[in-house]
Length: 164
Image (cartoon, rainbow, N blue to C red):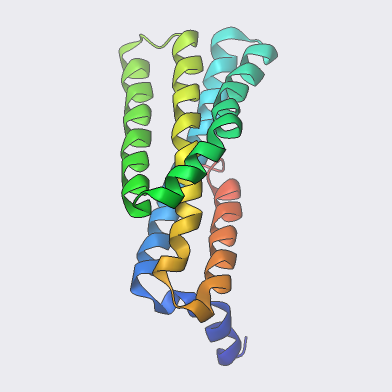
């Protein structure tokens, strides 16, 4: 590949803040998407029910669909970086709760429903803030490239997250 083509393709990575953002997105998305698969697998293993599996995933999606507008409102009115930090902390807390309940043998199906809904609520605020912060991390001429790379990271995470 031509060196100038490589520079143009990854031009937004010349901004240190965006590079750090990309590293965080890679870690967060891969973990979150892996978690989605594991929770679905655990739900099916616990119950053997396709309905339970689908309804738990539905509990994850409902808050994102219904509260995404409020998440966008928050991203427009409050500090986006702070929203991202707090949503990542909350997502970590949900993951550690799942892990703790699983390790101690106390994980029940209702936990899967509840924690999936909480995780969906977190994502409803995280995604709008994440998209809104990108223009703050790069110069005006690199905004489109930054959004393109962010999309690449997201869809790569969709493949890499469930793979392990």
